[in-house]
Length: 151
Image (cartoon, rainbow, N blue to C red; front, side):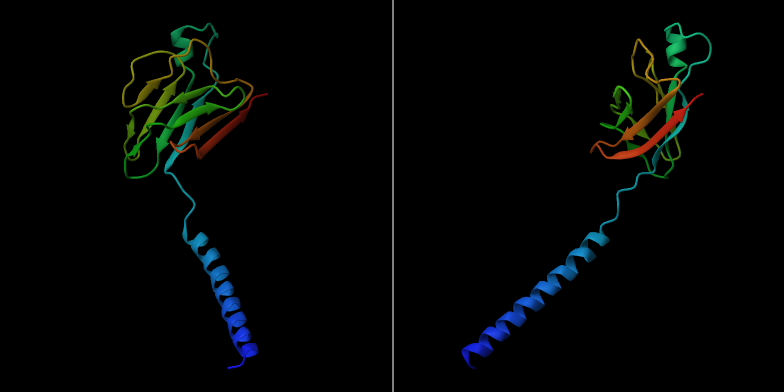
């Protein structure tokens, strides 16, 4: 084979390898599904009923429901619930949310159970007029967002 033929074969081989590599990248990226969580934000009571007097009763009447819509249990350890405007954040500790179960996250203080957890705040977390609740998993990925605007 002449040197010119060898360089042509080498160039064709490199070009074919390059095309094969670019064909593999999109297929690999497409094969990885976008992370999806069965855990979502449910009902939100952002404006506690009655007078806002900062009593524990009033603070605990402000809550967010987190619901596992899947069949399997999900460990919420390290997950966060954040108020978008001022970035107030509640971090879940050891809470395993069973399939098709919900937990209510209250603003004030109280005794945590499997159905109710308490942030321990002494002031309201949610803005009654315009705000958003953001739920993130332990890897800081946004799982769900719920917003409201009250006029």
